[in-house]
Image (cartoon, rainbow over all chains, first blue to last red; front, side):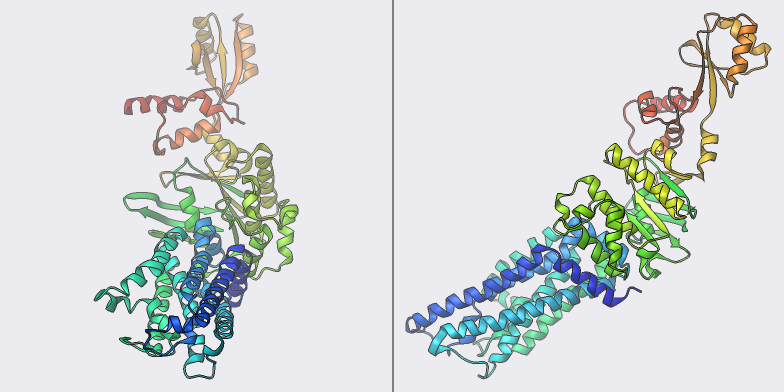
Length: 255
Length: 334
């Protein structure tokens, strides 16, 4: 059997030695923090106007995380590229010749990918939160308020799980371009649109992004089908299913 | 030692590899020869467990590939020239490979030097030429200092200097006692590098024998005679008890004839000769004859002399009977 620590070291070298991974992760950070900061600033400056007809309590955490819907795209692209570039370059055959135990290989890849995504997501989530709160001035909240800390950690877990979900789907499709072509429109267009369509939205509420993003909510929303922890579990189930599907395809298929 | 037993691969209706059994002997260069589409690459991918066989099995030193822990230390392979992430440096590419099989990092610099890529080790693979890509692929094959190396069409698309380099490298590796298994669709290339030969066509085994035996069986030598007095020549030959065959352009050929003896015979009989020359069928012709029925797509014409003799290191120019028969058979098919 291939040594798992050796696979981890090798996969870490792969990830750090190409620029695309660094860029996509940097983009995820900048976009999430930047848009959150911008919206927090605008909200603070126009607070009464923005809140005129609102009944629900003001969610200072959610305002800071306004950029996460775009930031998640960057981390999805990161997940796709980290797996997909092996297929686009034909390197997968070199990799599998070196580590023929395919499940071990995917386990190593997912560990390194997930670990790096989690580290970057945690930094992103906390920086986004603190920058946002600083700009919200008197309307800001703090980590000590109920559910806020859970929401910040939830944001990091959400990004990490979407990254691993994308990595799993890319392994299943074994094609980088196809994976990008399926995942980006799905998360950017299809899922948000379907979540707004009556009837269909009951189904769309069980998609990984909608479910995972429940973890970011500090206040219960009207008509919310389930709470943050159920959302976490649903998103986790999707991620596990995608990786298991990827492992199955990788194991069965000719490379 | 690589052993194939009844190895079979089917893609839908196409049988790419058909109950292939042979052994790659230890410590020599084995040429794996076949026309394009014969199933060479598929076989090599199955040896590395990249493609899963439909039937049969492959073992390396008695083990299935998947059972090898750190397989790069047993067998190193070059399948495609540029199976490298374009944005990664040559050194980093070798580094992750080394780490995956717990090969010490200094070995990375050793193989870079061995293939002459040290000056571009920290350059990204994007800018590499085909030849440099090939060298990088060979560096990764040698990384684990393996007993067995396997190269798939290593000279394809290389310039003469690159071809020479790879030839010498393979001979050197075999000289170090390693097993070298190399595929090619060019007989002429194999003739100068291989000690042992495995020929396949349409996924089936056509020949598996040492190179000298293949040469002995497949390259007949003959002496060609041309004279303005053909009737007298035939009488003289018959008188000496020599069998002859008709050669091209009204010449005659004596198979396995002795050049000196035939010259003396002509002189003794006062026979005028316009040509007295040794002929040897090229191995290329023998190979084409052997695989003719298994080539997937025939060109419009039969195997012309140009095609047969082009890279001939083995003295072309003498169209073997077989080649003529094949050409005739092919015309009938059409």
